[in-house]
Amino acid sequence: MDGRRSAAWRFGWLWTAYGVSTFGTRFAFDAFALVALLVLHAGPAQVSLLAAVGPAVGAVLSVPLGPWVEYRRKRPVMIATDLVRCAVLLSVPLAYALDALTVAQLLVVSVTVAAADITFQASVGAYVKDVVPHEELLRANGRLESTTWTATMLGPPLGGAAIGLFGPVTTVVADAVSYLLSAGALGAAGGGDRRPERPDPRPRLRAGDLLDGWRYILRSHDLRPLFLNTVLVNGLIMASSPLLVVLMVGPLGFAPWQYGLAFAVPCLGGLVGARLSRRLVARFGERRVLRVAGTLRACWSVGLAFVGPGVAGLVLVIVIEFGLITSMGVFNPVFSTRRLERTPADRVVRTLSAWSATSKAAIAALTALWGLLAAFTGPRAAIALAGALLLATPLLLPRRLDETRRDRNSEAEAKI
Image (cartoon, rainbow, N blue to C red):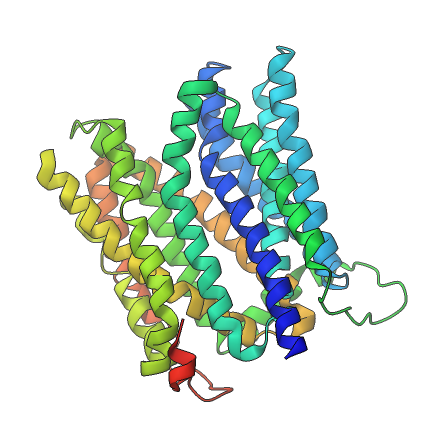
């Protein structure tokens, strides 16, 4: 019982840290683009460069950090990434106050934050695997997923209101403070993470180590199809997102607040899905839930190509996004748990870093490609193509999962 209480205590502080920092990130949604537009009067090319290149370069820079972090305790690494993000973000309001802010500085901050984000998320996965009992992994991942969707629902509208009331760098300051609070919560967790075994007293980073995460994923019969599926699904969903903004706010004549409403309300589906995921696994088994939820999340986006003006169009977007996000809310905790279970403890950070870096790079590449496509075909046709390709992605889901444990099927496991 003492061990379980200790694990619950540590996960509780981790959950607090994750919740605070995630809300800060969602509160500052598109903050750099807004600062570039409102303060620096940047043009579309500069804003697009900031939105695409910053995260992509950050993903590349995070690659060598994976092997380095693997042989270090994860809680200090998470605290360090929180403090780095806090410091670089605070440089933005400082430069703004001194009238010295530039797009180049925003780009450097964006790259640094993106690299730190990937390292933090990979370390969270490793820390969860260390401190949470095996049978509680799905519950823990469900709670983190619920927190993500709650922050996504509440953060952007509140952040937009804060910018209107207090100025363009307000959300950047709030995001920086959220990382400082997150570091404090992680400090209160008091350890518990495994001390990694080093292959020698002073391990050196070799060029081959940078590819270890990808090698492990692509050699795994269980993880390889999940990797290909999730990277492609996330990339296609995000590639059509800017085009939907153009379609709704442009030709269809929706107000910005209506567009925001169309994506805030469906986030309730993510919260519901995350809460249901554990019960569904207890009743139907992990394999069936992954297959069904993974298939359903690919079936909604094609409907966005048929959105029209007025109330009917707005309701259609809300219904489609609610179905998509609910399916993702069910799928993501089960998928995250499966990934942790199938990854050895000494490879978690490298595997998760490689996964995140690939996903971010794919999103950036597909977003740019779909932008070019929309320039020739129009946004509606490009959205339709992304939706049609998504319909084929369930073919990449694993047809069979190698079970390493019995399905959760007792009433105790079904409780939330």
